[in-house]
Image 1 (cartoon, rainbow, N blue to C red):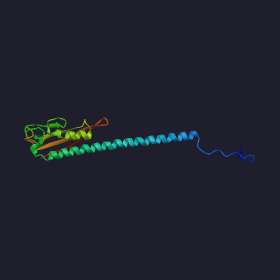
Image 2 (spheres, rainbow, N blue to C red; image 1 turned 30 degrees about the horizontal axis):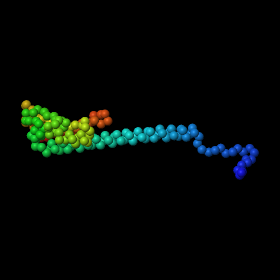
Image 3 (tube, rainbow, N blue to C red; image 1 turned 90 degrees about the vertical axis):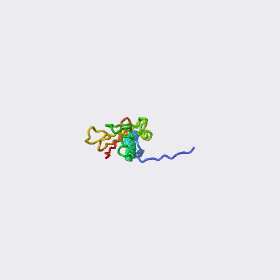
Length: 165
């Protein structure tokens, strides 16, 4: 059997205390670290929501511009005729969810990019001083294109409006 040498301390000297952390110190450090990490993680979650909301808003704006550009290609009287109006119509509002009108052509794109509950609305209103004021007697048309969708339980919308002469 082998003997392990034991260090003999001179009289009056104490052994050096063991260095390291106590269990309480380690527990407190882990608690502080967990609190900081949870705070940082919540910032990432909020940032992700803002990025998603900005992307949806940009997509809806692009769709409204696309619809408005298509309407801009129409001749003045075709602006209201294209959506089912006539010269005696006093105002016109169509939704992309309604089957059988020309506004429905954009519904598939709106639903695929913004969700199945998303929809677009196109309104055409005559402007001018004629009496009676209708599409045929107006001197200008106000065209409004709106896209509406639900995001995280809230209804969001983007509108674009122009006056056609």
